[in-house]
Image (cartoon, rainbow, N blue to C red; front, side):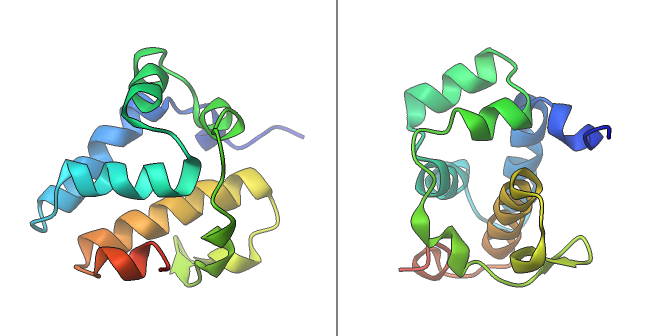
Length: 116
């Protein structure tokens, strides 16, 4: 079975779209980075390396230093699917990040986004 095309998308091409989406709503790149760091364990330097290497989403999540155990607390609908019911773990991680970015763009408090 072929893997979904989204798995091969470079993170470097999606990252600016995340930033653009939240900046339109008055949020910042720093907040996007905070969400990514919280979820994946990347830091400023390691995230930039992933961007510079043009890493695809599959590799981006596979190489994440530490997936936050609280990502299982992320619930809701993204792209017409409940994130907590997505069977493929990679697709679920991609949609978790999409959901966090959506919450940021919708003005949700960062403490609630990070499930604190």
